Amino acid sequence: MTTTATRPAAAAPVPADLRRSALPLRRRLTDGFSKSLMGLALLIALIPLGLVIYHVTSRGIAVISWDFLIEDIPNSARRIGGGMGPAVAGTLVITGAAAAMAIPLGVLGSIYLNEYGKQNALARLIRTMSDVMTGVPSVVMGLFIYVSYVLVVKEQSGFAAALALGCLMLPVIIRSSEEMLRLVPDELRQASAALGARRWKTTVSVVLPAAISGIVSGVMLAIARAAGETAPVVLVAGTVFASNWSLEGANTTLAAQIFKNAGEPFPAAQERAWGAALTLMVIVLLFTVASRLISSRFAIKER
Amino acid sequence: MTTMSSDFTLSTLLPGAVPAMPVASATPVMQLENVSVFYGNYEAVRGTTMAVREHQITALIGPSGCGKSTVLRSLNRMNDLVAGARVAGKITFHGQDLYAPDVDPIQVRRRIGMVFQKPNPFPKSIYENVAYGLKINGIKDNMDDRVEQALRGAALWDEVKGKLKTSGLALSGGQQQRLCIARAIAVKPEVILMDEPCSALDPIATGKIEDLMHDLAGTYTIVIVTHNMQQAARVSHHTAFFTAELDEAGVRHGRLVEFNDTGRIFTNPADKRTEDYITGRFG
Image (cartoon, rainbow over all chains, first blue to last red):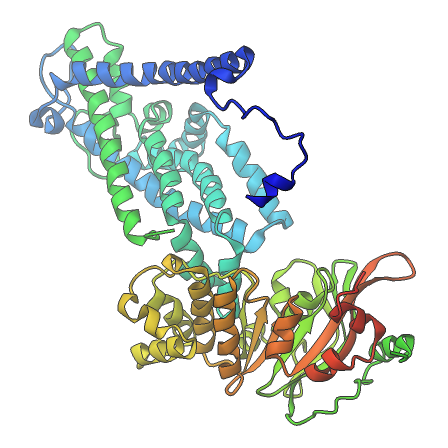
C-alpha cells in the first residue's frame, strides 16, 4: 500500500502484538470474570426452572393416565384413585371464556391506543388505568368479581371465574399488544396511506399482519398466567366433583385443585395434586405450541 | 449575476407573483400559491409559489433542512399524518383546492401517489405488494394482468416474474425501490411524488430508476426531491431551488429561491444563491 509509505515514521517499528496474551492482565481478568459471571447467572436462573420441570414431571408422570384426565374427583380427599376430569374441563371452559372476552377487547383496545388515540387524553387515561390494573393482585380481582357479580346473582359460577380471569388478562394484552404495534415501522403505514388506504384498512392489512406474532406471544403469556390463577377461581367458582362443561353453576380448575389437594394430609390427594400440576403445565405448553403454529401462518416469512 | 435577489425573494412571498416561466409548453396540473407549511408553531417552509406541469418532471433541490421534502409531502396531504402539521396558502390540483374543508385526503392520495426515500415494500409477497393498492381501490378483475403491467412499467418484471410469491423484502435495495414504484403506478395515479428515491441506492440502481423516470414521464407527472444536483439536471424539465435562511428573529425557514426550466437554472440562474449552490460554492 502506498499509504503506509507516506505515513510518518511514528508508525510502530515493531509490528503490533495482536495475541490475546499481549493484553494487560487486568483487562484479561475483567473479561474472564464478566464472562463467568454471566454464565453463572444463567446457571442459577436455570436451576429453579429445571427443578420445577423435573419434580412436577417425575411426581406427576406416575399419576397421569387417560382415566386420570377424564374421571371425576373423589368426594373424599382421602380416597385413592379418581381423576381430575372436572378440573381439566373447568380449566378449558373458564380460561377459554376469559380469553374469548379479553383478547378481542385487549387487541382492539391496543389498536385504538397506538393507531388512533396516540397521545390524546383518553389514550393516556386508558394507558394509566391499564398499568394500575396490571398491578392489582389476583385475589383482589377475585373479591371484586365476588362483590360485584357473585353476590348480585347469588351463585358461584364458572362465568364469574372467567370474568375475574378476563379482567386480569385484559391489561396485560393491551400493553403487550400496544408495544408490538409500536414496533411496526411508520414507513409501512405511510406507504399504505400514500396508496389511498384508509386508516382501518392500513391497520387490518398492513399493521396487524406485521405485528401478529408478537401480539400472539403476549396473548399466550396472559392466557398461561390466567390458567394458573388460583385465588379468584377458589373465591368465585366454588368447587365441583363432576365435570361441568358449561359456564353456569359452580366449577373448578386445575390450579384450584392443586391448591386444595396439596393442602390435604393424605398421600392420595397429594398425588392428584402432582398429576394436576403436570396436566396444567402440558395444557399451557400445548396451547403455546398451537398458537405459534397458527400465528406463523399469518406472520411474515422473511425479513 | 446582477439580478436583485432581494426583489426576487419578495416576489415569491407575494401570492400570484409566479416567476416568469419561459417554457410553458405543458399545462400546470398543480399550482402552489404562497404555500407555507407549519409544524406546530414552527414555520418550516415559507411562501412557496410554483407550478407542476403535466407529463413533465419537476425537481425540488436544495441543501438539507430547506423544506423540499416538506413541500413535496404537502402535495398529497401526507403531512396530515404528522401531528401538528398545517399548510397555509393554496395548493390546487386541476384548479381544485387540495386543502378545502370538504376534500378527502384519501381521494387526493389515490390520484397523487408517492415513492419514499427508503424503499418500504410491505412485508408481503411481490405480487401482494403490487396488488394491495388495486385491492383497496376496489379493483378485482384482471389482477394478474394489472400486476404484470405495473411491474413491467417499473422495469422490474423480467427480474421477478419467476418469483412473484417470494417476499418483497428479499429483493435488493434497487429492486425494492422499483417494486415501490410499481406499487405506486399500479393504481394509475396522475402525479407521482418521489422523495429522494435514489438516496439509498448505488449508482447502477440509481441509473435504472432515472431511466424509468424518463419513461414514466410520458404517462405520469412526476415531482422529485433530490439533493443530488446532477440527478436533477439529468432527469428534470423544471427545477425549484430551495434554501434555508434565518429570519429577523434568527429562526431557520426553508424558502423557494428560484423556480425555472432546469436548463436555465443550471446554465443561467437568476439568483446568486442558486448559482453558488450549483457551482458548489454554497455556504
